[in-house]
Image (cartoon, rainbow, N blue to C red; front, side, top):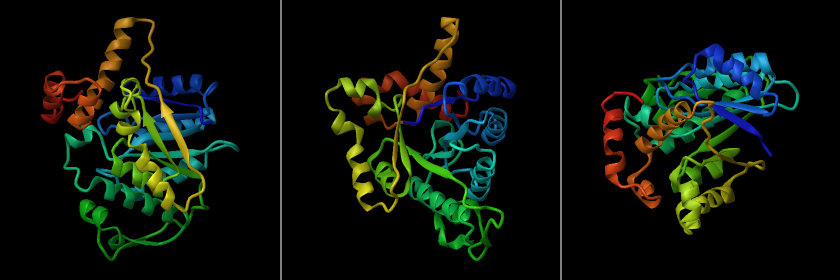
Length: 280
């Protein structure tokens, strides 16, 4: 069992590292969210890895606005800080509300699949040709005939886990990834979904199993996260929870929100504000 804790970069960097040091006494992995408009995830993960000796991971990064060469390098470098028994985890998804407010998320599942494939080859020390990854090549303006490799890597131990709730992304995760993150703040994987009596129908985890049937990867980890907001002050805890709720209702399809009891009037203003660039 992986015992980990995910932190969100709304506090300043030194505070985040201080919290991570406390968390590392009880948790083997410290995960950080990657929101583009919050603090730099690679910088914080590096500080946490160097200070705590805990495993570290992104929960989660995304292929839009992220160069896979840079991310693969960051993950491999973080692996150099890992003591025995600890691992780096690259959690990746299709991008949330803050990402979609800034850019068009075209072909998201294909982009994630290409991102994973590029990173794996780079970690093995293989040379890759940019044109072999057409979605990323076009999206980042890379030269099709350009090649890249990491001569300095020695097959770093990086686990790839995918976060998502839709059938297509879960099937892709089952085939290509080392694990999946099912979060309690995803409506399809929430307590409300369990209580609905229709969890098998709404969770889409049968799609994950179909992908696993095609996979050549032996290890597969299913991570279930429970979202908590903790503070000595109740109002502060609720305010922090509202930030995360904002991100969820801004990115989930309306049909997923409807299944767990939301009406469009509950979240329309929130979605409109994020799309307009007003931020969380």
